[in-house]
Length: 476
Image (cartoon, rainbow, N blue to C red; front, side, top):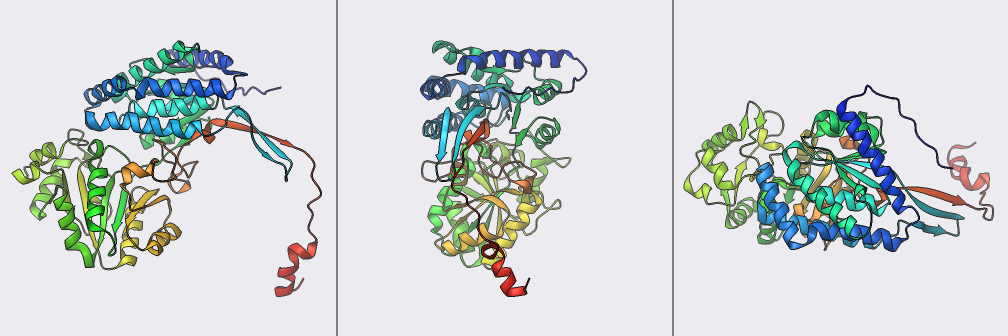
């Protein structure tokens, strides 16, 4: 017999009643997956993926996203819509989520996967198409239904993405209500109601939404804010590092939370590394240009929405920078401090790269720790190096979930075809960022597991086995 959780009733409101109806429809739709075999579940997941991955959809959604939000650029959003969806599908097709998913005969344990229920998926404006399909694929892989809450800024794109997924489900004979979207216009009250009424909340986006998800009373998975620092070590291949940093920083105009916000360059290679970055299209601001850029990028202490995720030419023009800056791919500012008084040390969501000089590797590691402690705790960092001992030292000593070695951070952090991280658009940052997961969001977070336990030969060590070392050293 399955238990039903009774939630404390809240005051009725039009938003809450609409959301309650969506949740109820999702529960009904889930019955169509009850008893479905793995092949049928995988067919549903593949249909969702294809609805967004196919070239005409990927481009149409990318064009709509840029028009809808004003963030990023069409070409990169096409890549994102396809690459993330394809990579996630690869990961999902390699795992089992129906029936018995693991047998441990030595321990007498058999594990059965079960759905978590109706998932409330809160999605950001930075990825209004890629994130919804990513979460929907993972939710359906576990046999769940999903209700998606778009960001108000990306609502039209997300609603169209959901329409495509619903059409795909109908085409293969499954209820379209396995994937639903909050009604437009999106309200804070409607999103809050979804958080409270769903069975699991998975929240990507503003930290305000993440905090509200955790306070909703519903089991919640939220992710932390990015502010990625990357070290360029003395042993780095400087040309390769600069190319990867440029590719990553410039992708979709730095909308990704995994985009490099700062590079920390070792003193011995500082000038050469800056030269390599300039060769990749970076414009090095002088002190006066840095101040003008700061005045343009922040208005009353807040990032200027008219400049974030815009082309470098637009940012440079707004800051009154010279023609060379307007023709560059990204802008660089040299910084010496971290914290509120040094705004370039935080996440910028713009084609502006902050550059630090470090006297040695220890100083570079300490600077990275300082940057993360200010903004981006738990998220990730990177290093370009030929010394794996330095990479391991970062992993051993820094409070981050991911340390990427010799990689373009944006393309590697959320999963890549040439690393072992699973594909996702939601990066957990551990308790360091007050998150409930310290890994990339994946299919495991969308299933419950029943453990069938049978008896095994007794596994009882003696007291001497367990306490002997303590007794020998300190006595009984």
